Length: 262
Image 1 (cartoon, rainbow, N blue to C red):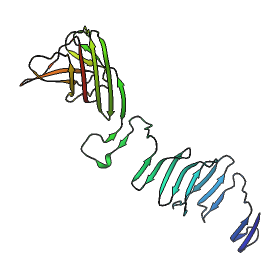
Image 2 (image 1 turned 180 degrees about the horizontal axis):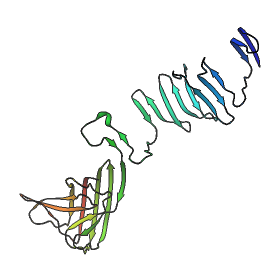
Image 3 (image 1 turned 90 degrees about the vertical axis):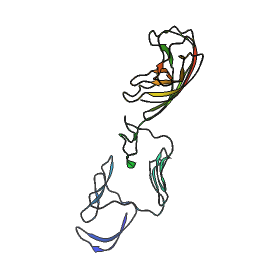
Image 4 (image 1 turned 45 degrees about the horizontal axis):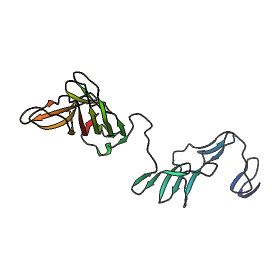
């Protein structure tokens, strides 16, 4: 290494105004390179790890007129700054989270790592009890028909249930065909994918059917999801009076569609 001294004082403890180093400047493990009158900024390698420590009151700035990258030893970029354009967080050198003029762009999925986590909309606060969007799910389930007095059994020609859950709202579509049912009492459909809310009004589902017998005088039929269960009760509504449950039928085709709250 060659040191060119430009001004200063030589002696036992020399002071240099400006130093020009040609070649490598090697510091052994555990030796601190300090900067500032109070040695506020320090760089040290302890033999295993490297530390950059700023102990001052001010900020730390990395300045560049062009692209700035933080990379792994193999050159894969982990974090990339493009001045005036974007900042990109990368996984295996592929951008997954990038800032834009409108916010952020995400490549791939956003996964909540803790139970109860979600997207918080409290910045636009309203009068609701919660502004956290914490669940979205799609799936299938297998609905079945049973009687309220005796469950009975049946031969199913179709037994389909699909759902989409958005927050607490569960959207379901059900198709059931059956013959030879031995159940008695009123007709109910069980095995909803989520337990319904514990309080509040029941949820009404649109009902379409074939070969299902309705009580005389019924002007409307629907499916009702009661509070605190996994069950749909088929109900008939009469003109000028309250509704009643639809009796068990030995054979029918039933379609239900609608939303209830879990």
